[in-house]
Length: 62
Image 1 (tube, helix red, strand yellow):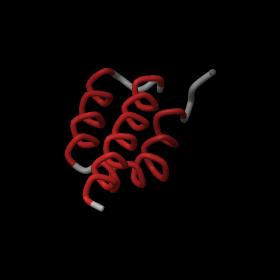
Image 2 (cartoon, helix red, strand yellow):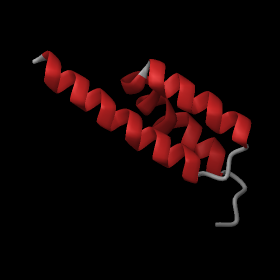
Image 3 (cartoon, one colour):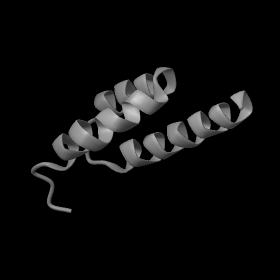
């Protein structure tokens, strides 16, 4: 069971990292989100999807 949770955490971390680095946010914000994602993968995923992603893409012309 623990192995499945570790694999899930790695998958979540990779997803967050890719999504964050594709966003138009500043490099400093990307680094902070990546470090936080590494420390708190599941919680960070929820926060990024609800709050961070909206703020990163707000005002973007993409």
